[in-house]
Image (cartoon, rainbow, N blue to C red; front, side, top):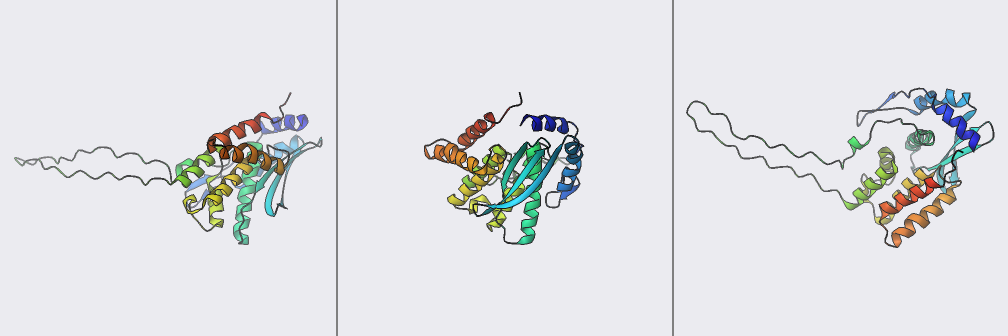
Length: 257
């Protein structure tokens, strides 16, 4: 894979700036559309004999997105991204477009979004600053002391929400895709899911990260089962198991000599 990697390194140095031409109407946040990402990277990729091709297929009864980078030498890299199960064709189309953009950015290691953390509902609130509750005197009047305002305690986060947040952050998995997944289950929060559904969501996020780290999706699934699921069953902390699994997968990637 050396020829492909050499060409990709050269192409990445020549990518055009990615224009954030879209706006999330809910969060008022700018992002780059799929077209903007492709416009920024395609010329440099083509110049160095590279092309990106994306396809969908049914794998083990589920629809997955395959993202391929082909080099003129015949070498290639492929990532696999599991798509959400959405019955509504319009919503599926939107989810597919989002997944295509995410997959292209991931396989090329480019960024198309502003920081998502600011919109996470679990961000701790800043404590209120103490206020001077004494009103100024007028003439010979005694100062009047107002009753202090009662501090507002932020709602506690549920263990299920916290579990998904920590793993999503570790994997750098887009918050919008989590919301799409939850929406496909007719819920708005991980706290509304049962334990098996949470396990399924965690697996979806992990396999999305592993898409271009293993030669085949089956290898990623087997590795996840062995190093994460089985490790957790033995009593290993889940976040620690996922982190170790990620480090092990990255350590086995072919290096450019």
